Length: 309
Image 1 (cartoon, one colour):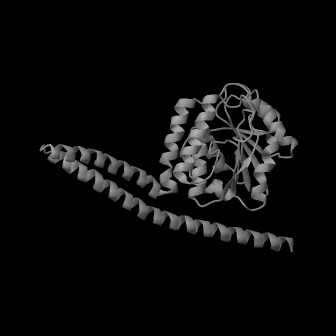
Image 2: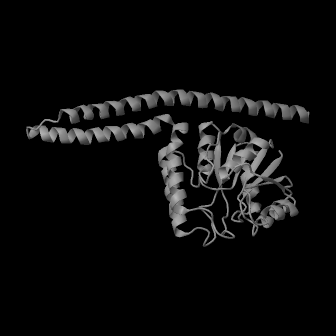
Image 3: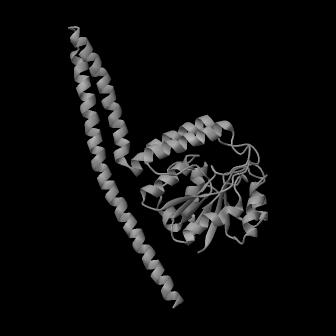
C-alpha cells in the first residue's frame, strides 16, 4: 500500500518544514505540497526538506485538494494542513483502519484531545454547533467533520466530486464519502496550537460551512432535504390558514389568502412526496455502488492472494 502525504499550504513558512520532516522521519518519502501562491518561503522550505512542490492552478483549500485528487494515483492519500496543528506521528492511527480493511475514509477527531489554546472559545463553540447540526440532519454519528487530517483510499478520492473551493471542503468531502456508499470512521488524534495566524474567519466561514452542510444534504438524502423544505412550506401555510380562519370567525373573508394557504400546504406535501421518491432512487444507487465496491475489494484480495501463491 503506497501512501502519498498531501499538504495544501498558503504562507506556512513557520511550520511546513517541521511537518515535512515529521513524515520523512517516519519513512514517508512521497510528500506533495500543493501551494496556493504563497508570498513567503513556504515552497522553498518544503523543497529543501524533500517534498515535491507544485503551485495550484486556482485558489482556495478545496481547489487545491481537488487538484491533488486529479493528479495523484496512490493507494492511499493522507491530507494534512501545513500549519503545524496536526502531528505526523498520528498518521498510523489514520492508516490502521484502512490497512485492516474496515474503512475507506478515516477522519482524525480533534475534539477529544487538544492543546490549550488550539481552539478559541468561538471556534470551539462553532465546531460543536456545526457537528451537532451535521449529526441532526444526516443521522450519522461523526464528531469532527471539519478535521483537516484524513486518510482516503484511491477509490474514494477518485470518486468524490468536490465543488467547494474554501474551508467547506472538509464537510463536502465527508458528505461525498457517505453519499457514494463508502465506509467512514473517526480515530482520536491530538490537535496543537497553530503556528502563525489563522486564515479562517469564524463567523463568515462558519456560516458558509453551516449552509454547505444543509445544501449537501440533497446529495446524501434527498428525502431529508425536501422534507425540511416541505415542512417549512406547510408551516407557513398553517400560519396563514390560522389567520384566515380567525378572520372568518369574525365574518371577514380573505379569499386570496385562503388560496395561498392551499398552495403552500399542497406544495409542501408534493415536495415531501417528491423527496421520498428521489430518496428511494438515490438509496438504490448507493446500495449498488456499495455492492460494486465490495466486489472490487474481493477481487483485489483474490489478486493479492494469487501473487503471494
